[in-house]
Image 1 (spheres, helix red, strand yellow):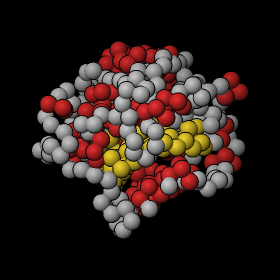
Image 2 (tube, rainbow, N blue to C red):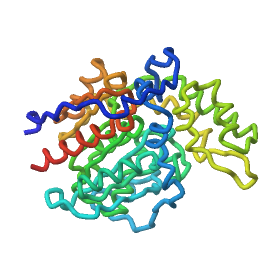
Image 3 (tube, rainbow, N blue to C red):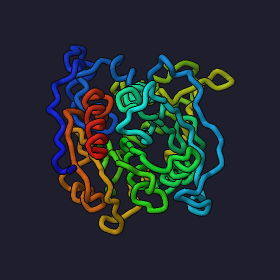
Image 4 (tube, helix red, strand yellow):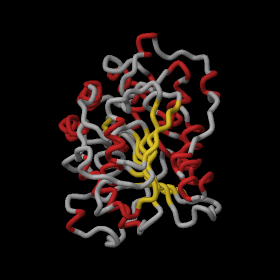
Length: 353
């Protein structure tokens, strides 16, 4: 049934018609955190998806509930931490998807805040609760070592247990979050709750992470050491490390004003800096473990994170997979939000049919 699923051909979004050119031709070369062909977007368009500043002051929902051992035990959750999250409840439940939910995991330097607009869209379109998580060492979640995918998978497993999500979970991850949700799906201690798995522009492969990520962490440390008091001052210090304004603004969504009025970052920069190598890692070898549930990989056409060299690994880990491509860079959900939502919606409904 799944092999017959073919989403509709998508027309170019209105964002393509935006005429502002933010970057020089040099920046058309694909790099992490280059939002594809950034000529399509002005800074307001991209930052709206990254920060959704209209509701950015909303306090995170993080209730404390006893762990329910439907698929996990306390020992299996050793080293886990309780994740901060937001949840968007639908105004009307969808009968076809009754009992299901959608859980979203962000990428490196991101947070649940980046997904608030899309979470609302998903909740309205799918008619199911949508949870967006802050992974460890990001957003409002705890700062804890180690920062690796085995422990991120445990954190997600703990979240599922605490919220009583025993079945019907559709799990999405982008970039680093993509590897985290794949590690979760490949762990039989956790994956019984899964209905579908969706990886946004990330493959389950091992590779060196771009040096730019380490540079971003270094730049943030420089901002903290300089005791600047405004984001505009912080932005000036970021410019030598990153020319793209939307990327700098995305990184600065992690900034906050400390008690002494200086700019500090929510993320633990020492942990992130030390963990750059492990972020490029993956805890399993192809063929050693599999998850046979329905899996969707959404590739950005102008991104190399999913490529001909690692697609065999995708198939080895997830034999019931399909690959779809959108005309975008690494940030497929931000660059093509309408098409991304449509792909996810059609995929989940096709599985349910």
